[in-house]
Length: 75
Image 1: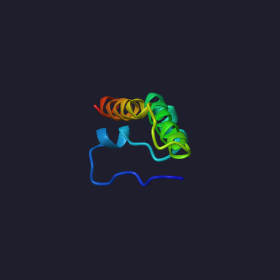
Image 2: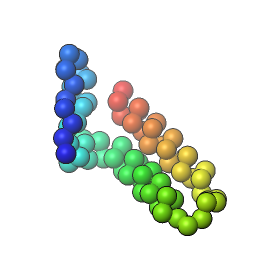
Image 3: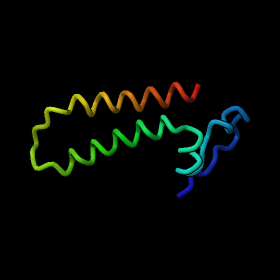
Image 4: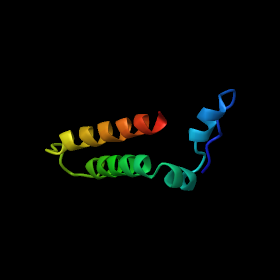
């Protein structure tokens, strides 16, 4: 799976953009790690038989961590 690179942007922006999972994993491993951790937790929650999950706060914390890691790596 590939993502089309941005057009009509500066070279600085183009250098930060990745177009495949292997490329993103190589260039931004901490971002991929944090988002993977978040989505794995969400997936396990969705497959849970219980509607109550005391770890909902953990999911929100993982979302925030992945979000902020993405922003900080984009600077």
